[in-house]
Image (cartoon, rainbow, N blue to C red; front, side, top):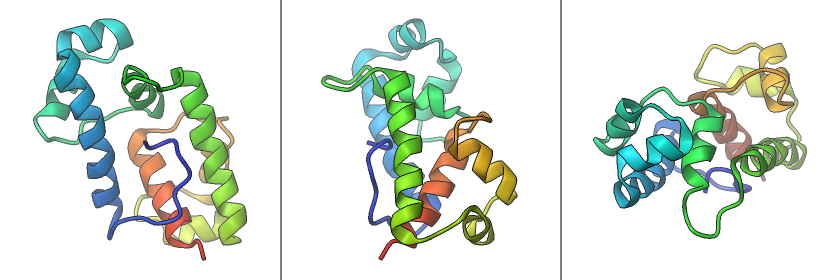
Length: 141
């Protein structure tokens, strides 16, 4: 689950995102895109794109809404909170600050934006989350 603490990551942010998207797509496949759209307010076309193997634009909250439909999962708000807390914990473990994260990111975010997103003061896309998580977990000892 994307919101859990990561200490290791696959070879690239794209591989990590694909891992998470496979989990989300399985939930959508199991429940049906129409039902998931109705329960989560995530656009049906986005869900169908996800099950087709594409990487649609998702907010971190959208991914949490989808993941929360799986059995035994916490509510979406708890998942987002846990995901952000695990980023902060991972930075502490890897002894990284936002400037160090910024320099390793393959996407265009400055240190201030990284800081605001990790603290939940700015919206975060799922792609941004995956890239930040990748840098943090890849830097862990």
